[in-house]
Amino acid sequence: MGKHFFLTLLLGGCVVISRAQSPSLNSSPSPTATPQTGAAAVAATPTPAPVLEPSLIVSISEQKLAVVVNDKVYKSYKISTSRYGEGDAFGSWCTPIGHLAVATKIGGSVPFGGVFERRRYTGEILSVNAPGRDPIVSRIIWLRGLDYTNKNAFHRCIYIHGTPQEDSLGKKASYGCIRMRSSDIIELFNWVATGTEVAIADKPIGRAVKDLVENRRLVATNTIRPEIKSVFVR
Image (cartoon, rainbow, N blue to C red):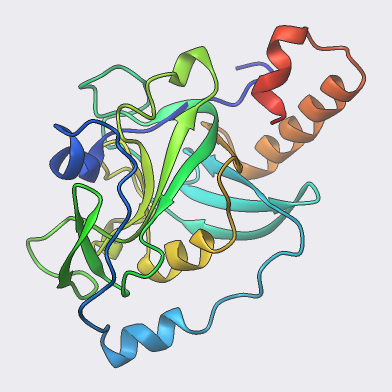
């Protein structure tokens, strides 16, 4: 992969929810239900937000997502990427790799465990590891690709989103999206903004952070080809 980060996201849980939809940026209606006491307690005790805007690194090999601030890991989370591997083709259900960015955020007022259908909150709330159910829950961070190798990510509806199936985290289990615990995606949702950079790579987080720092240095010193600059800096 050289100096590039590669990102691969599948439609995973997104397939059922939005596969047939065009990528209109639907906002979520106000919630009509409240989370259970236990769930609310988990979501109400977040880590302090980073002072500076973070970057996100997804490590496929480690099945972790790292929040990077000042070129150092601020916090990391257990995740799940595609069970079908990495890629960007329509219908592949793979997770794209490379350099991406946050396109939009959906569901800021949805309760912990709130279920989405076609990017809208349905009013239903699922408990953690609810049997027989695997929808998108709690929050959606929709990604867009910045590389040729992940140019289809937005139209494939590649998200970072909550999952009720927390037992599956830490291994490849999704259908293309990046899954997180509800408590984790709610916290992360509040830390990122439209345009926040997201690098997905099949390498350890430590190596990915070093590559990101080096890529920025090359851009700053004009030692990287001009057409590559947009891949590493917004």
